[in-house]
Image (cartoon, rainbow, N blue to C red; front, side):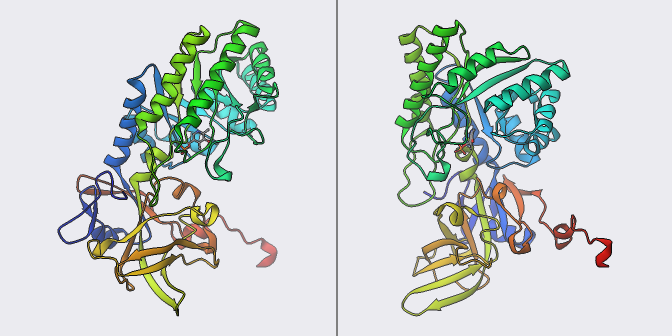
Length: 436
Ligand SMILES: *Cc1c(COP(=O)(O)O)cnc(C)c1O
């Protein structure tokens, strides 16, 4: 179902989020507009945290690449979650938001010297080391700074998650992590143990995104636990933390049937517990890194309907004032979304239209074949589940300014990201003197 969190249709037939009428949001903030349901976002944090903590020692860290602004970092911190960052930019945002650094985990397959230094200096909780190059570099930087750093090693377990090719990450042929089946992972562990300035506390793996099959998590967890046992056997070293990544799937489109978060928690936590018993290990602390399952459903994008083109007998195109600039996922992955006419939300669907963006690309289509009431220019189109991987993947293609983002809650709407202006677009442009 596309309506979730605090979303509902009010007595005027308008979509309402956080007790704020989306028609008013459009009047006040313009379009396109990213709207974040604060209660929905917070509830997703709580549900996941609760599902895992009920089953054992665990920490939920939010994958900030999904949706990252200073206000979002504040909310995540208030909910008591940790944070996963993948770049100096995300780390900077978190630090600026006052996020507790000891609860930040730093990922990435090519962290720069500057990024590593920034993280170690800040006193970051964990660096998730991706490869041998980084391991040596980190050790050297720590030595220079006179600091010891807790690390996890990212392991590629060789698990095929059933999801889109580009969002799979657990298979052997991947740019991420130390490969398990060919012995690279064990070599990495041995090297990490031997280094003076890094302290190996555990392992990480992330098998992909938008996963519905909980056996994929069970399988990966089981493989990781076997490896922890192997490490103990060969080196006597017991790893006390197991980070099983994110990837829990959500509803986008008719036919998507995500399991309950409890099922995800059970797949991971019960496997960890039973394997620990079977292998004679101390049960490690479990970390999970949900992104999409926290932010995705909490976001809605509002667009203004504009031009309509009818190709007789074939298709009706309805163009909106945004598109692949603010949501590149349909063009990038063929992702599907659901939309309604927000200002006439209880009218029955009478036609099938395809919702196009305004960029100079035929592939700039937000939704193919969407059933809507008859739409005209000036109607508000609401696209659901755009909280994850929309703003963070947005671009200025065609020099379209990025939309604004508002946080709605309990009848109030606060701007958390200003709409870009034309002036913003040329802010970093320079004209060399010889062209003047
Ligand atoms: C992308 C990513 C996540 C979050 O994935 P979701 O599918 O959004 O839950 C977590 N951990 C790592 C390492 C990632 O790359």
